Amino acid sequence: MILNYSAIKKQILNETVDTPLSGTLSGHAAGEPFEKKVYKKIKALYPFNTFKQFEYLNKLFLSNPQCTTYEERISLFESELVSFLIRRGKTETNRWNANNLFEEKQNDTADILYIDNDFYEIIDVKTRNMNRQAQPPNIISAYKLAQAMKIMIDTKEFNKIDIVYVEVDWVQKGSKLVATDAHIASIFKTNPKNLYINWSAAMQIQFHVSDLPQDFNGTQEEWAREYLTNYYKQALKRAESMKTKFAYPFEDYINN
Amino acid sequence: MILNYSAIKKQILNETVDTPLSGTLSGHAAGEPFEKKVYKKIKALYPFNTFKQFEYLNKLFLSNPQCTTYEERISLFESELVSFLIRRGKTETNRWNANNLFEEKQNDTADILYIDNDFYEIIDVKTRNMNRQAQPPNIISAYKLAQAMKIMIDTKEFNKIDIVYVEVDWVQKGSKLVATDAHIASIFKTNPKNLYINWSAAMQIQFHVSDLPQDFNGTQEEWAREYLTNYYKQALKRAESMKTKFAYPFEDYINN
Image (cartoon, rainbow over all chains, first blue to last red; front, side, top):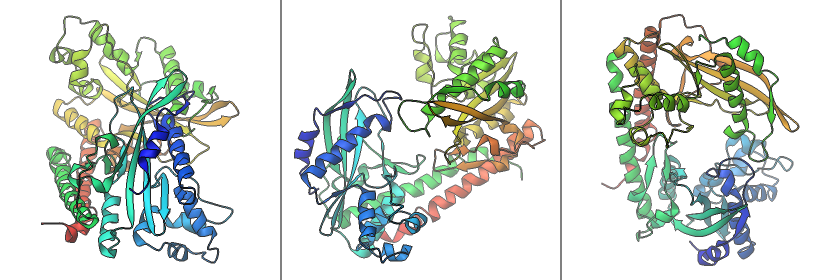
């Protein structure tokens, strides 16, 4: 976490957005304007280092018009780890051109990308309606993170990225939503054992940012190996429960 | 399918609802008013047999005020199969009282319940924006359906229920959404082999109603056993791929 998050937090507190006209207040739509606010605050503080993920990709490809194939465009990322985390799919990357730029995509890894020389801070903003009790949100696919940690170890890119989550808490006050609190946490600062993987919800890691302990003191390589150990064991456990809970109870009922 | 769906379909075609003021047109919110329309049409045709699921549960419990515990309330269902499919959870059922009625819940099995003597037609309405290409929607949990089919076989309740899906297709015309087509299909009239289970999306069966073949001619017991056979094999396959795809590739990276 190299950004000045305490300054950012201060600027977010008491910010307001209009209550959406329709739809439930639990969903993505209600909180989305706060995500835009966080982006604007960070952009104002670090105007030359701050990008939306799609914006960075557009900039990278626009500055290199000689690269026209998927392979050529992918080679523009100077880091395999960063490439894996932020590139778009093959078809989309092939189809990209100056008249067909990337647009925002909900399952991009980063809401906001902070780039300083060859360091990438991947920032994801979660917004939370404090008037309701809600399940912890989807954070990132545990499988995607496992693949990323494997690449990190293979390429020894241990100080290349951070993945930071910003939670904006809000309540409704009449026609406005008001930001009442904000929480910031790095995934690499929590013990991987704390990470809950919801295997049936697209293998998503889920947590409220405000609940995430930040007391892991090991290196990023230690984190990656700890994470993969935990992930691997849980995946095997899930494979076992797929059989014992979801298959075997029906064994006596099947046609042979 | 004992309702007159061709009459219902005719009544839905060219119906309009207001375009929602905000939010994306892909989501649940846009199509929801059509679900309400379908309910109203069916209710008008069969006023004494048509209920929302929560409405039926409220009616059942309100007519039996002597039943106050979970066990007593659950015993009111004269069918274990129907009870499994439409009852609410233990805590909720315990907390229910005349001043704390059930309300609509998104993951209820039925949007609409048609009850004729001791037959239950469970009707689920799917709405579809024809201006967009979208993934097939979540239909029902494959695991829940497996449990239901196990109960069906155990209790021999083979002519107790149907599960019918109504797809309302719509397009946006200015400030209105217009219903352009409707499709009706019974899950028991399709070969269970046609059912795609998305294991990572909460084990949901997914299909567009309009794409669902309706040529299964076996009995409901045959359907149940075919379904369980197919489900069981897929669950074992998924357990295997949990290991080979999601665990083993990371084996060399873990701490021992």
